[in-house]
Length: 165
Image (cartoon, rainbow, N blue to C red):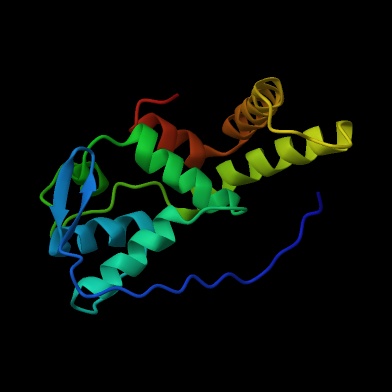
C-alpha cells in the first residue's frame, strides 16, 4: 500500500428521471435534495434540474480512497437522522442556516483516520481488512480523534452540536 494524491472524475449518464432520493427512510424531492446537498457539501449549485442533484449525490456517495469524503458520508449516514438536521431543524429552503460541520472539521476527522491507517500500515507489512485489523484501525483512529478533540475547539463544538462529545 502506498499513499498518493490523484484527481478523481466520476462520470454519470442518466435518462432524466431522478426526481428524488431516499434519505433516512423518506424520498426527498429534487428541490429539497438540492438544499440538503448544498449544506452537506458547503457549495451552492444553482443549476436547475435533476442532473446537478444526481452529481451532488455521487459526490457524497463515492468515497473509495478518500478519507474526508468517507468521514462526511459516515456522519450523514450514522450521526444525522433527518434531512432538516442539516438546516438546524428549520425547513430546508434557501434562507435556512447550515448546521452541518464545516469541511475543515470533516478534514480534521479524516486526518485522524489517515494517521491511524498509516500507523497500522507501518506496523504491519501486509494489512488485511480482517475484523481484528479493522478493530485495531478503529482503536487507533479513536486515539487520534481524542487527541485532536483536546486541542481543536471547532471539532469539539461540532461534536457537541450533535451530542457526540
